[in-house]
Length: 398
Ligand SMILES: Cc1cc2nc3c(=O)[nH]c(=O)nc-3n(C[C@H](O)[C@H](O)[C@H](O)COP(=O)(O)O)c2cc1C
Image (tube, rainbow, N blue to C red; front, side):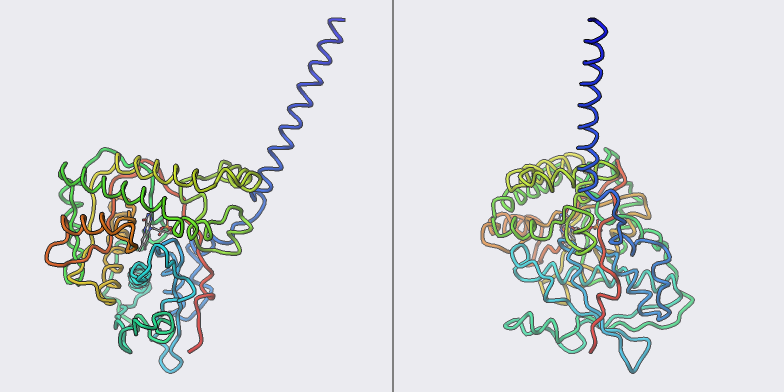
């Protein structure tokens, strides 16, 4: 009798374990554990070698740049008459009008692309010069049409072996680290090295770490997140570019994914599987809770804040701010630091107007515009890289 009971117990445990194992296997499969991540191909060191055209080689690096909502809103036209010239356009089909109603962040993302392109050019033995808005600035009354007609920048590559860069390997490290940072303050040398990057730029950088500023800027970041999570148009816009499976990520190759919150390895497939099978896990309320918790943990573990500002708010200045931000972000990684933009409070929709005005009153004298608010520090954890489009998808014919 005793024997029989033990056998039944063992069979039951085995059956339960089997069902759980099958369930786990099914969840991991739905989450894409067997699907190759082609959306990560641009991060491989030899990716750029698929083209022999130096312009495509630098563009294949520039695609690693950060962009608002990871929209990668970039189009490239190669000059047919001059093999050293390419035009960069903003892609009007990749805007995020809820959080970026003036397409300001889209312009900052153009600058980030240019900064990455320049570092790659320098590594490959070229200097890259930029002429911003070579055919004139946008017609703001018909912005989207204007974006597709007026290049943001004309880029000219010139063979130049005298240029050198320290930051090439930083191109291949994750751009944005949303995890808590260590308590280590920035050293004077680190602060000086980052601040020096603004010399000669139309944009400026302030690095702030006084207790009063830390409290005030942290509070702006949290308030901005709270307001954004209550703005339905913004949460719907983010949800529309969130891709929850490997298959969806391979198709989109842009937007958000669970890696954006630092999830990696088997956990990533498990989470993706669970989110697919139980979509309610990722509803608006859960998204809001996550975003607020992430911002609070971030601001509680930050060594300093950076403000990238411009004298006014012209399109060229927005691009210049993006160039400076990406240079800072790249060089920070070379110095062993990481950063995360905290853009919500800088966004131009009506419910953000009060904190937007307050942060400008406090930190943007003489009518300046704050283009980027960043938290900076020493990482506690390496952050995974995120989706990138295939370089050829950026190409447009004239
Ligand atoms: C203009 C701009 C604004 C951004 N704002 C935020 C932000 O508010 N919060 C955040 O966590 N990341 C922000 N980012 C980072 C992007 O989300 C990130 O670059 C993109 O998702 C790609 O991921 P990666 O930088 O890790 O490669 C911003 C980036 C840019 C260029």
